[in-house]
Structures are given as C-alpha cells and as structure tokens.
Image 1 (cartoon, one colour):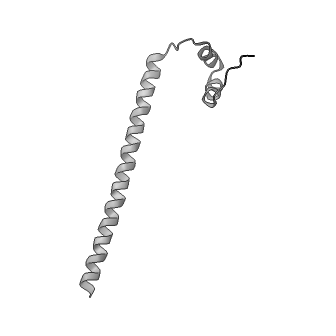
Image 2 (cartoon, helix red, strand yellow):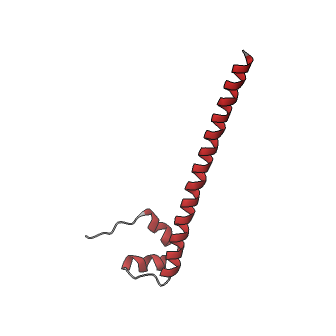
Image 3 (cartoon, one colour):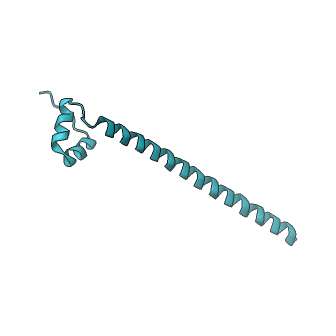
Length: 80
C-alpha cells in the first residue's frame, strides 16, 4: 500500500479549503500564483523588519547597561 504522508501544514490547508488541499495533493498548480508570490515576499519583508526591530532593541538595552555602568563608576569615583 502506497500511503502519502500528511504534514501538519496540510491540515491547516485542508481546514481552510478542502478542495484547494485536494488540488494541491494532485499536483495542480494554484491559479493565484501571483498572489501567493506577493504573500511570500510580504512575509519575508515582515521577517526582516522583525529581526531589525529585535536587534535595535538589543542594542538599546546594551547602550542602557553601558550608560548605567558608566554612571555608577563615575558616581563611585566622585564619592570617594
């Protein structure tokens, strides 16, 4: 018996549209390829923006820690 593996992502596709899932399993190309390509590009851009935002936040925290460390060192130096 030749059984195909069903992936978790396919379950989501089936829940969204069983007919589209069936066509995909049969190897029929999507008629909305341009929209799917735009969606892929949009997700990639969102991922880049998220990475840039996370790195910016990290740099901000590091700058804050360096600033606080310098302030503490300056205060201790002037205290004694």
